[in-house]
Length: 349
Ligand SMILES: [Zn+2]
Image (tube, rainbow, N blue to C red; front, top):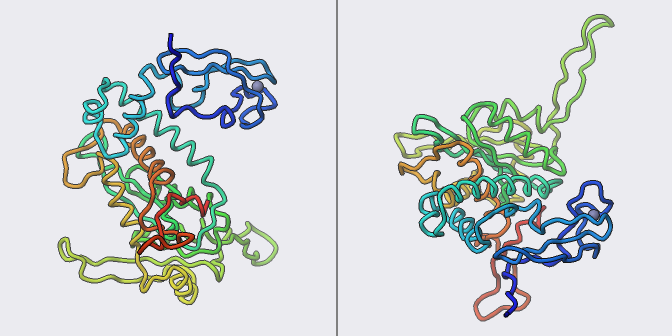
């Protein structure tokens, strides 16, 4: 009998690690401690043994494909269609699987995408950030479910993604998550829309806390206050509309000096304060998630479906799509071409 060849997506053993949390080689790939015991199933999945702790486990353990009954080819097809903006039903039709498979895989992809983002996006160095919210629905058309995001306008990398009702808690979760992923939260320019919560939360989340001196020697200590360092600024871009048309754009210097804000603008190479990077990202995100398409009747029946799809689309956007706005110079020009676009957004991570 002819031996089946492994699917092309099979990862090298060097990239896999022991899944036994009590093993000293746990989660450390490239130690040459894994051997293949056997292969099983329609996809010839490898059953591995760790030489250090003798534990045996499937190579899919801990991955989004763990315990999936559909073939790898179909699972990959479902994932690809979802990230291209297909709805659950369209994905079912195109991939030839049951709708329950699409729903289940979508949730897994979302969960793994979020965990991957969490593990990788730490200690990020940025010069500026842009934040905004996108309108959408979950459950029915009377239940708005917004997506709020923070983007680095230089690398176009999305640092934070939050979903929920549009209120101060959504903005707070977004800013706290974004700030926690930064190498230095005290040196940057934050550009947002005119939403008042951004301005009221900014000092507490990005500023430097200090304890004001007590008046006299008795009584309670005064509340902790927040100082805005000279390297930090928050600018709000407030659009005034007449109907759907923007008639005027006001720039509000919410926190930090105007000098610092203008220095940040110069570093970005912008002529005026704007939130174009996040607005461009809003357009991309609406094309990648079926339930975010404007003026359509599409909405997710379950909020968790929308959340998972948002995270999966973000993972694909951040880590596997080349970005046309990120050209790198070619080592030597090729005809008229002197630069090419690369998926290297992790340059800044
Ligand atoms: Zn082990």
